[in-house]
Image (cartoon, rainbow, N blue to C red):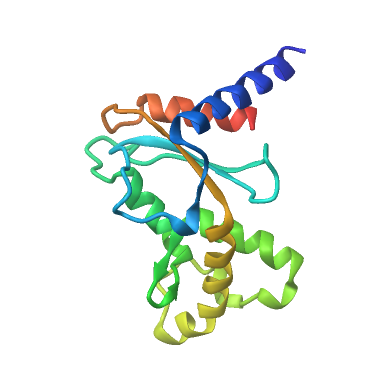
Length: 168
């Protein structure tokens, strides 16, 4: 019973954040010119399901790390010209591909799960997959909770992320 109460409280808090942000953002419409907090926790939602969080993330959990929310989100979004991305720099992109390829086996490429740096030929073979992942991610919806704390493993952002994952 307590877990159900906690899950309801979690989604109520996300609804309050959504209202404060003026709605969820379509990830494909996001860019660097938008007002991003320097630090925060981000929540991705399946586009067709209101309460389905598909990814919760943050950044700069190592002491001294200088990355920002937008820099991390940009790694997930991928590139616009050429349209695609780099799944080796974003576990979210890798997981999105795994979900897409489970539905559409023809999206499989043997090199995709190779974590080593890829050759130009491998990147060319993977380009259609990176484009499919980018298309899927562009339709996801995004909320960002600003949390201005210092980089490091004991950050409040890390605590929020871990507990949010437990409830989602």
